[in-house]
Image (tube, rainbow, N blue to C red; front, top):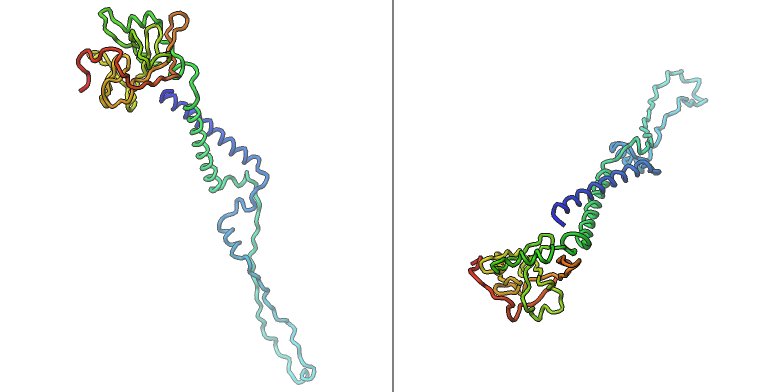
Length: 288
């Protein structure tokens, strides 16, 4: 799968998850059966209400307006003007809590951030899961990892060996492989492993040292890695450098009479050949 395919897959998954998140938020708001009692109440009102918890308000005592006069002294006392009586008025603030529906109160700041964080984290997990599934899922048809039709056997044989007798590999991009002519006698390490069909072999383009792509060197008639100097002859056998083994190769077969099929889902690893099957180098090297 190419980098563009990964980007398209990620964008599509993120769009789907975003739509699901928006639908979930709207659905929860429309179906909420338990509205919060304090929804829509300002923070100042809630703070004032909490400050009155546990406080008992006593009524202010008002003295009686009737003045008791003793019967014995009543005739001797002149009627005097009543003294002014001080009265007090207690003002008690009352608070009325009005419950509002979720539609009227809307979404609070805390709810918005909680839902946003949940949606973001959920999108990340879903996208990670989809990418992991796409990475590990086998590609059954088309492209690398499947059976690739490299072309007709006759055409490949005529392209890999020029009229002058020079070997030139044919690169198959879909298979990431070089198609090369097989040696007249296969080494014992290749016997019974289906790495040759109709006189052709398919070599993986990747260097077995650190994975660099190994280009073809026409002057030396072999493959030479520019990253760390590993060298292989034209059938992929190790010759020099830090590579620990031969170039990897694919299982191949001929179908429908003359179609050369490279099975890129099966990679064959072989150790360094004890004896090279073909002569190398046949000229100057392309790297120092």
